[in-house]
Image: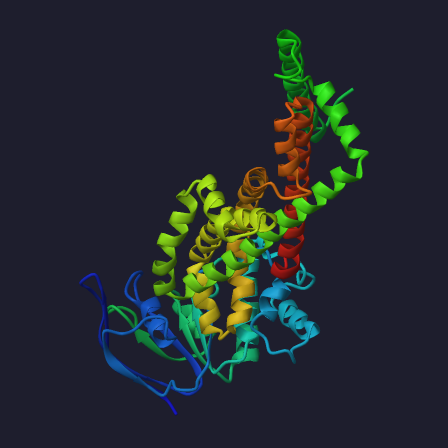
Length: 196
Length: 254
């Protein structure tokens, strides 16, 4: 069942951020969300994930569907290892070896036991990505997920996401159209009157 | 010979202690009357003599047990009440005036009132409990309030259960507040507990021994018992902080 959004609106302190937005999302595949900074992309994601209530409008087709996410910030437990951060969201059946294999695919082989605080910004971003991919879910939210990654790492991580989570609905917030292209985006939602 | 930074710090601290012991020794020599101020050497000698008696250890263990019990009860209840207040605004509003009142009331008032209802043996348990409870409650609640909102949102999106959320997000936020509450409360519960014993005068207690020494104008004993309380308080603080750190590592995964 596709997700249907009708007449969605949201304002903060009298400033309209989302105004009467309507669109449908497919069951699976990548949907790119574009727009200038502050246009309301993260607000839209937060409403879809149930973290913010909309001022108006309806959202159908989300009942019973689980989200996993890479937020704008990494939102990792800094004193915990990469492995423990990921294990926190995993079912018991997922083994440490499986988690290590996921980390290795993103270039983090051997970093399982490293406390997150000791990792670089790009490495933390990849831990956050692996956590979102490995956690059970139907919809994967990626809010500027490749920020801070060099070109080669970005390509490897894109391949990893498509291979491991390609059967889910992926909502990708990006400023980079090439990134949306590399992720094989099926459609693009423009927020704030810009984008395609 | 070069000293490491740690050794230098220890040496500086030791020198500060030696300086004040020197001041104490000189003051006692100037006054020249042991009934007013005994020398540190005499206080230490009296303490060593006391340590050779069974009555000393009986008093130390009884007082230690009662104060430890008061501390443990307050730490547990304070943490539970703070968790409830963190969950419910109504509980927080309800408990606020109670905690403020307990914090602001003088120990002597509690001791005198409590003596009407409580046996003198249990008085120090109750008083150290009362001293520690608001400190624990306030600090643990501050830790809950300081929990990272973004991590809580992450836990919500990933549907991490309440117990796992408590362990991963709340515990790391509460931990530094709990440690500072322990540091603050441990010294206070010893002072208040012994003060309660002085007033309540239970058998086999440090406070009772202090009171007897006062009645007999036995100043060396008063100083020796005071020295014992200071050493016990510092030892107790180190022990609890070490245990708290171990617990933090085990539960928080640091």
